Length: 317
Length: 177
Image 1 (cartoon, rainbow over the protein chains, first blue to last red):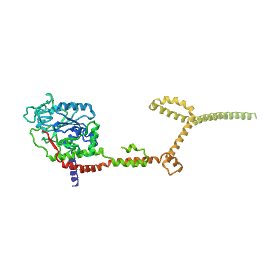
Image 2: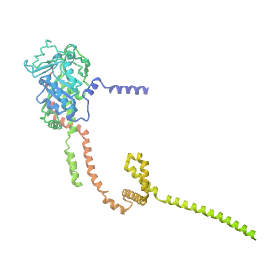
Image 3: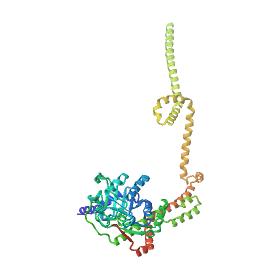
Image 4: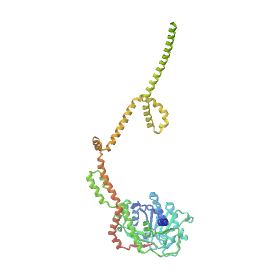
């Protein structure tokens, strides 16, 4: 009887620690590095923002955390930027692209300046992203957009339908990028992941002041190392925070499209709770690297005077 | 009488011949033993050993391929190096004495006369040098403590900054459409 109980508890323990498909996907797309410094959190990951889903200086926040960041209205500029980045920084080459863009109710990935009809705006199909990014070394695309799984519908996977009748599909002032007719998505090496719940995604705007002084200092040091101005505000999506926190509530799927349009969105409290956890996480990472050492610095000074010098370099750390 | 004389003379001659041969035999054996002892007592093997070592040291990996040829050549050079064996013995003795003196510093309490040079050879000064290093270690250990104090930091930041986050509970939300 005892043996049976022991075996049962063992199976339960193993089952509780079994890796989920989402965890596996994240481990591949955005490997968790416990020893990563603040400026290295986003190594190998690029974040693409639609300008109207961002805040001023938003990319500086992500760049300070080690991400590659793009905030453009023209998909061509974004794709060119990723190509240039991987050529210039092969040691930090982008392997994963997180799209913080519009999904246009699942009719096309959209970058836009605003909802004004004549504003700068461009669209791209998922197939075109795969076709264009694969030669640059990108292997994972994570779509954080509205009704993202509708973007995977076979009818518009390679070529978007500009006459879909959706009023959110505003004029493509900067064009539409489709995949070439000969492109076969099944032969692409890029994995496209979306949230399992295909609904309206949300992004929260926050201030860097909400971070701890140590985290602000870490961001400042990182920004100055990159010769950029330290960030003041940032915008972060709920999906991004879930990925960063390795949240158990996150569920990603690959290659599964849906037809139904959803108007659902996560409750406001969920986003706020995620943001608090996100800020706490950055604070902890920053504390590990930039913990103030005033109290510890004083002790060696006393010992140095007593010991007779010769340890200035070690103590002045 | 004559017969007896003849027989005595012949016996004497025979005896002298026998003894003479024996004497000749013994003298030859004596010379061989002396030469063999001189060869054996000569420190050629010691010199030869040293030379072989030199070869092996000089050539390194090549020593095995040159061992036979070089060995013969150097073995002839070993003959004048007879005095070297003595010096080698002396250095060996010196080395053993140095090692013994080196081990004694550890036992500082054993001989007081040896302790004095040891104290001058900074036996105590390393202890002085090590004390700052131990202080450095304490600093590193205190840097590892932030693992525990990180929670303190987060609690402190939450206490200082949570009011701002709790007061501004609703951040601006942008919906992706």
